[in-house]
Length: 299
Image 1 (spheres, rainbow, N blue to C red):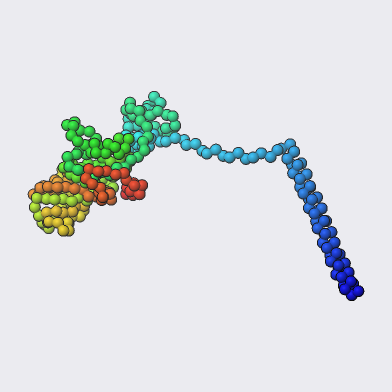
Image 2 (tube, rainbow, N blue to C red; image 1 turned 135 degrees about the vertical axis):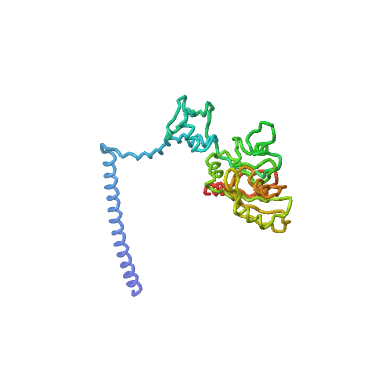
């Protein structure tokens, strides 16, 4: 009997607790259902109101106003922006058949631009580094039909390239070619003092006294020409020197040594504006890297 009473007490207690739990759960469910119904009814009323909900339309990107005319001309490889301003002022440029003389004029997509009667359009800027060999002149064309540096880089770009500065026919070494008119103007303008290094081989030993004269400067028609640095080349005879200079006058290295009684047998440019011919065979070319281009633009 004890076992039965014990069983009844335990059993009756568990049933009563579980009944209470079920009761509270049932009431909770009913309240939750009622709340859900109320929310649904409120939402239904809102969506059926006289001002329906509308999705916000995304903003359309702002269209470009166009490209300034001088930049458009420079990007076409014709000349620099500054030079383009002069041509615009002189009435050389036409847009859609109308001569434009406004500096701030902007070319819009679909416009046809003519420069001196020739249709032009922007080109992608290309930068080519050439290790120039002997026998080639640094011009775009030659009346005597001599070989030009453009013959060596004919396959480098579909656009017309121009040498940045010049190396005479017998001078070898680093030469930059590009269709970027702004950069060409920058690298060749005297105010930027772009450095160049040459390996010069002479017919006799260069004296220390003449080192001083070259550093001090020699007078020519253009003015006083002087080298920035000069030294013997380590491991080479004393008739071979390294010269650093920023002047870009025609044949100035040869003329300076000739003034002092030397004959230049070989002249090789080993560096121009930080660019070298390392791993580049004579007569070969390569496209500059993005880093090299950015470095040039920051000079």
